[in-house]
Amino acid sequence: RVTVRFFGKLQEVAGCREELLVLEGAETTAEGLRRRILQEHPLLQGETFHLALRGRALQGTIQEGEKVSLHPLYSGDEGMKREILFGS
Image (cartoon, rainbow, N blue to C red; front, side, top):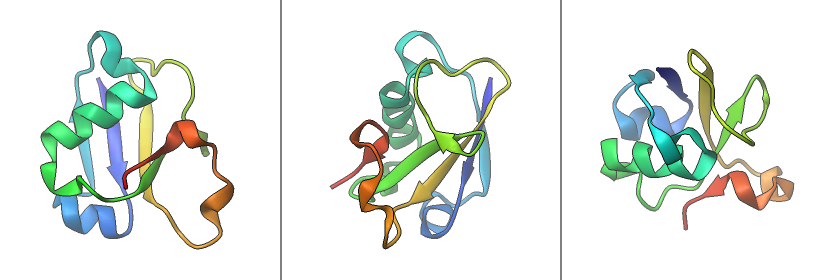
């Protein structure tokens, strides 16, 4: 299980501040988690966001009990690495 926390506009679109998800297999990667979040919250389709873990860009595998933050893309974030940016 991992906790996903939604921030800014994404919190309003998702309709919650945080959610507990049980991840399996490929869902434990940044791309897998992105797909799972969009499956759970289809209204987030088309939103641009990045995933963070412990204040840093989410990379590698997500471990049991971790807290992942979902942040909207703000002005000045253009330099974020492509692997963690999702959306249109």
